[in-house]
Image: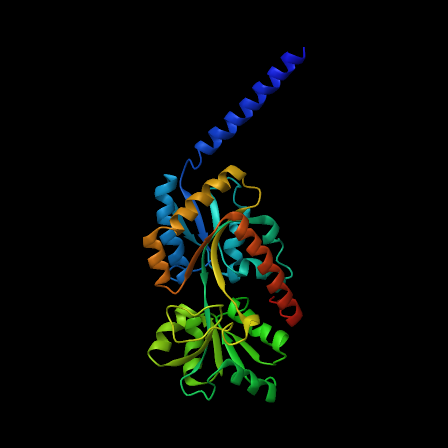
Length: 323
């Protein structure tokens, strides 16, 4: 009797394994949709298209980029959360994913519970810049002016909830400096006021400002990372200047619904990391100022958890909400 029971159990287990293996082998069975919560043509969209093309070859089915801009990435994020949890729909994961629950108290869902990380592609450095004729030559001089004249020194950023905006909030909390954050709707929108001197400085995406730094329209005081950027090798990093608390890096990765089967997540992870490690993609992304630093799903999820704790705390302490 016992032997018959054991045989039945073994047969059942083998059947379950076979079903799971077949399901993994058959995934994907159609085109996949990579939702990008930004309009076409931007840096993050370009990353998705480059990586998605390589993933298509690996997965054997097209990875179709679907742009769902609006709502500070909330529209695209919600679209993925509402899609079936079958691994065929995934999200371009960027910092607003972990920040928006604090910025939007009535969001209606928790993206950190609804989604999980598949992998990191690259880090997206930022930079502190000032107008060409600015009297400030270091971040410390800018912050000292803010100490002497509280709530008068303005620092632009490309939008509420972006890492540059969050770092401008962090300045007050970590350095006891009262600057005035001025969020714009994108890097292009802030540039005229930065060049003309209507704002004292800007925290912005490094790639968006690198050309203007090189042609002398603006001056870079520091990159918001631990090391110098190859795009601006003569510009010191915040850590190098003793301001490691202001190291703020954007990031670009991939996320799926949290209830997506593990075997399908693992398949997407392998395809993503292989695409991110392709030499042609590395060269393409580094030319955009990105630091290609692939991370597997465990490491990326740990990053998401850390970033959520840091930036949601920063937003709540600053008492900043939207809507």
